[in-house]
Length: 579
Image 1: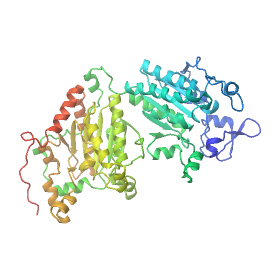
Image 2 (image 1 turned 180 degrees about the vertical axis):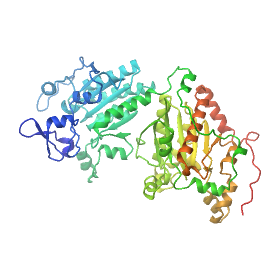
Image 3 (image 1 turned 90 degrees about the horizontal axis):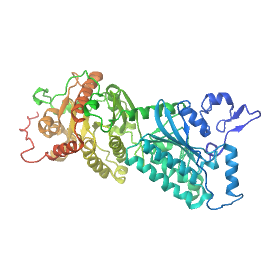
């Protein structure tokens, strides 16, 4: 196992100097403290004593320790090379603490929190009855006060000296966290180096938001156990925070110097959620004023363009993408990553976005402008993990009562071998179903390509908008022309026949309104296009936010129920002939 996981900082000569276990540089201890315990030579993050960790993250003198009654229990009278009671006494003398966890109340930039923090120096941060009690009491206090819970985890796993009583702490803490989820209380979990075993497989990974520091080791079984079991060499960086981020298990990996700011931002964004019982007019008043052109609801006011020309504009390489619109439309944004199951899919981005004084959840397809960006984002074609990330964020929105905004721009879901193996169809179907029943207002805008089910998975909204030069279709024009016209060159004819453009989709009721674009397309003036998009989103939310949940769900059901129903579905005249 690497030194990053096993070795503590080593003193060299006088105690004023500490040797970095990563780069072997000697660091003056006052400089190391000023640098928050991070090696200035190689950026190695030293493990921190629990009190130092609390000092760095919490407001000065805001922590009230409520851990006086927390004590470990020697229920088995266990002894290995020494009696468990003696081992506990040694740990208490070494650390000055009674147990490997403390809990209490505090503030982060004035935001109240309940905190539970673990100390690896106390018997490896192992979870026995005392740790489980501290975490459970913290969760119960957060529930009682309806205050966010912050857990700072570090551990080698369950405490063997307490036998199955230690094992039961996994259930005890997890059920306490479950009540927070049921009651809509925010739970933020900071996983630090190392976090392993029965601790990782219980409360710390159940947070609404999971974050960590660079190169923190996090996993269930240790690397040596895994290598001995599977008889394989593990990849470089295995079980580091970066590895988990790439595999969809974490939302954020932040350097220690940024952690306090990251926590402040998360707390602030959640504090701007609509408050249960708050008058709807007050919630609407928190939306910003807008300066863009109003969305168009009369198709006769839209310019008539050949469908194939619109398709080309929708696919233009310079057309603004989701993250660019985010920078124009929203006042703040915190991207959150991962599906918590397998991967971080860069073809879909999402997170918490501030719109005036109201927080929404933003989810959108993401492309790029260069070849490397397009490859990184898989040309905006999501794998199942992208849709599962989107669903995770939708559930987050539902839990905290946050409106949802989705931006659609994809040629379609990725038709790859791995995507099929991991359930592409199931992921899309579940996303459509879950989005249809979300108890919060949802606004969708097609900003570029709206390709088939891959687009619809993010488009089951209460208000569905499209940019003037975007398109929305059951299949690409090229695919339709090949299958039905037996000639790929007939794509322009297929585009016209499919009625994929804004005027026809507005007439069909597929779209509720169309967002105007600058002359020549959104890429000619992204700021103007974004101002119009912001106006359309805010207009829709002003209408939707006052709507009671039952009525919102019924209207959404009725909206999609009408499509294809005789007497309720408009029918268009034949399209013009395409030369």
